[in-house]
Amino acid sequence: MNIFVYTGCLLACSTVTPVTSPPVNLSPDQQTLVITSADPTAPRRFTLESLPPESTIAPGLYFRPKRFGLVQVSPNGRYAAFSTVDHHTLVGLLDLSTMVVQEIDVVTEGEVLNFHWAPDSHLFLYDYRPASGYQRVRGYDLQSGEGLVVSRTHYRSATHLAFAEWGFEPREVILSMKERPTDEPRTTRVMLISRNQPDSFSKPRP
Image (cartoon, rainbow, N blue to C red; front, side, top):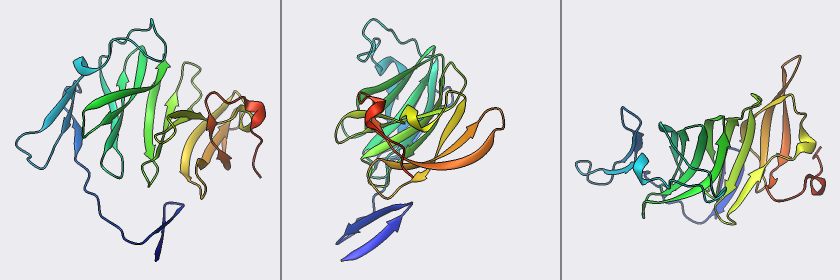
């Protein structure tokens, strides 16, 4: 058995199969995600018009995206996490084998800044800036279908949060933090919790 350490996660496996991710790029006008398959002359396209017009998370909320924002393919090459630019920013997950899209989150009057995939492709995080102006971190667990957040017990309202690196345990991450008024940076290790889990159930880790 071979043991590999990769970006802070311990992976044990008998064989390692390299995965070539299909390149997913934004069109010059950012209206389309272009997925290049084995045949580069026949790329698949996912357009803004392919997105659902109404939110499934918040029924009655309608999307009017101006363009796609960011896109990043999972390490196993199966999914692409993406965001739109809109008053109601959509965070979505595109299955590259079926071209089926899933709504993950809605950020109102804000923007998604970065995506971060876990090495095993079971989880991704995104740094985002909501209307408050203070940067935050959320995530999504593909296996459980749960939206993930950082417990409010780990930070104050006037704190910027950003992903730094993955921890050793599932859902464990190291965050970069800057607190007003000093903006002095520091890092902290946290366990992400389900978005539906009360903060009182989560306690800070040393």
